[in-house]
Length: 147
Image 1 (cartoon, rainbow, N blue to C red):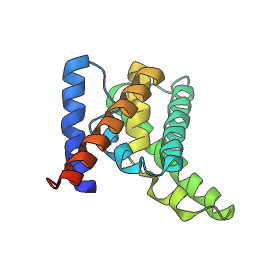
Image 2: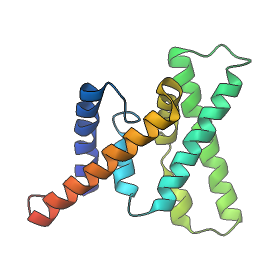
Image 3: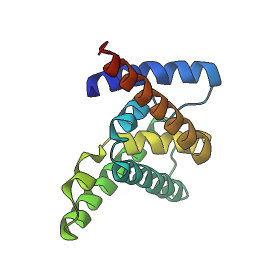
Image 4: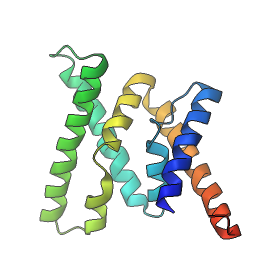
């Protein structure tokens, strides 16, 4: 079902963006979050990493010239760094592996970039709306035997 969620997530993201002119966190993020809805801790960690990345990039932009592709690249790099440090911290704290492992490397950076562009409330609420709707639609199709 994960392949279907990602594919339908891309389509749902594009349709949502065209209808509302609000990005639900990028085109792959809602599908990824929809896959994680069964584990709220993973969703929370992904959102937390995104917000930390966004804050760090805002601080970095006070001393560096960051715009366009460079700003996006810094979002990805900082999210990789935070993801790595989170993995180290959770391994040392003996937390369950599921919390730390499948956070995703690109998703927090993409989400942080969208938060930077259009604001946290708009981005996170639209992302969660599309992800929940997507999960419900895919579950309905799977239950009816179409997937």
